[in-house]
Image (cartoon, one colour):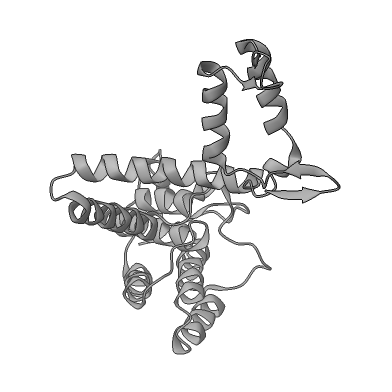
Amino acid sequence: MSLTGGVLTAPPLPGGAVHALLRAADSVLLTAARSDDEPPLTIPRDPAREAARRELSKRLYHENDPSLLQRALNTLWDWISGLFGTASSATPGGTLGMLVVLAAVVAVVGALWWRLGTPRRQPASAAPLFDERPRTAAEHRAAAEAHATQGHWNQALQERMRAVVRSLEERALLDTRPGRTADEAAAEAGRTLPAHSGRLRAAAHEFDDVTYGGRPATEQAYHRIAALDLDLERAKPLLTASSTPTTAPTTRQGAAE
């Protein structure tokens, strides 16, 4: 205590003393001796409690209280610590076992992210296969080989798939149609070249994953599509009923022999 301006003042109380004083106000009657020959002044419980509350609400008792942000962070940390403790006690092996489980979950999520690529809002086949000026199959092949030489497998795979589709259009196995997607081209070409339908679908999926799914292409994937491109050049189309004449040609009597 110190004497300031003739008034006896007390230093700020710590937080625990604040609650102790409030509890004391509920159970102890505050008394003050007026003089040696007069009875002490007894303060009723409720007024004493209110007086103590008013006194302790003064700013000088709360100068060292933590800020609102600090209290919120402390609450959050206590909640996380309690959750961590509950999970570790419920997991076989305690804290070490829980860390192993968390590492396994992170590994599974990472594997799924790598396999499926970045989530996309719309189907991968919604965008057209060709997005630039029309080029021949030979031009697409040359661009693919140039990218492959530099190790740019994404661009190399994309250009090789475009070469596949453009080559089928140049051979009239696919009609030239702007806006066609890789999946559509694979499905249409698979009806004419059924022996290669599975590889065409796989190539279209590789193209979609790289172009719209965010998955990096590999050298092996590029070489698979390049091999498909070469095989399709030598493949013979399957003649369907719509491509064969519906009536037999007529012969003219007396034709020269």
